[in-house]
Amino acid sequence: VYWILHGLSLLEAEPVDDYDRVVETLRRFQATAVGPGGFGGGPQQVPHLAPTYAAVLALVTVGTAEALDAVDRAGLYKFFMEMKHPSGGFSMQHDGEVDARGTYTAVAIAALTNILTEEFKEGVVEYLLSCQTYEGGFGGEPGNEAHGGYNYCAMAALVLLRAAHRADLDAQEFWLVNRQMETEGGFQGRTNKLVDGCYSFWQGAAFALVAIARAGYVHPEIRLLDGGPPEGMADAADEEGGLDALDVDDEVTEAVDAATPSSGPLSMNQFKLQDYVLRCAQFPQGGLRDKPGKHRDFYHSCYCLSGLAVAQHGVRSPQGGGRPHAAVLGEVGNLLADTSPLFNVRADRAEAAILHYRRLPTGHAALTSA
Image (cartoon, rainbow, N blue to C red):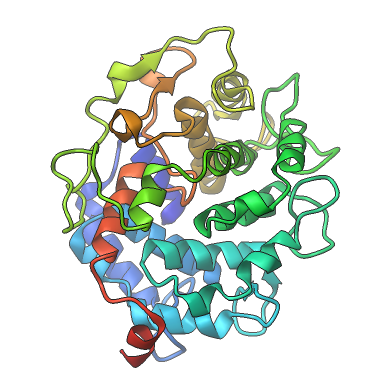
């Protein structure tokens, strides 16, 4: 559900007539009788951090107050704290693996829904830092090989915890730039592997995360998470949240650059990445794929589009109204909506959700007594 809805939202082709059904379906995925309030992969399935991440982001993509209020924040917090491991990481499910993916999904959803307490954060940064390898990237667990998906998870969680500067960012950036292949323009996930379209986001967004960390965490979503005002955003933004709270897309085409010999403001070649997604990752009959010769699927469609959005928009700053300054390869019609490099939902939906949830009670005592 998340992969489909997020991809369609970036294309600004959302199935809004189906959104009420989406909310009702996802309500049934939230664990009640089978455990505290995480989400399972289907009705009455045990809660797991991966579908919890996907379900909450799908609800954030829907963006209505009804969708956002469908999340049982107290139950979700209890589930996260049960998944918390003595190492500082988080287990994907009861008796499941403890890794950077589980830790990021917990941190991201806790930050977004305003349940990121001091008790939750204890030991998390140290665990994530221990996953950085001699190559400069992050592995899934301490001692594992650096891997694009786990690397993104570790970096995004560290940025959300305002601790990415404690990692070796020079080594991280060196590892990242060497994952973009000169001929294809796309990214490999690990050293000596082939390019895969999904890493357009996992690796591409990591460049944005490095930039945010180097800039001292100056970013519109970070500012909102820290309780700052939504100044410079749409005048309609208010503390009520919801689908109409923030809309930055009406004017985005006023700030589009034509492709130039410059590779873009990020330290990757943003235009070569766009070229790979547009020329190689598109399936002739629709959808996107790993590489030519592979089949299309919802996962690759979502993450190829997400990587394309990152390559077009780069990193927004609160200056200039927080609006993206897009650099688009080809026609302006190729421009997608901006995606959050922290959460991978549309940036306006992430901001609206943060505003909505930050009005609600937080703190360990309040969440555990509910």
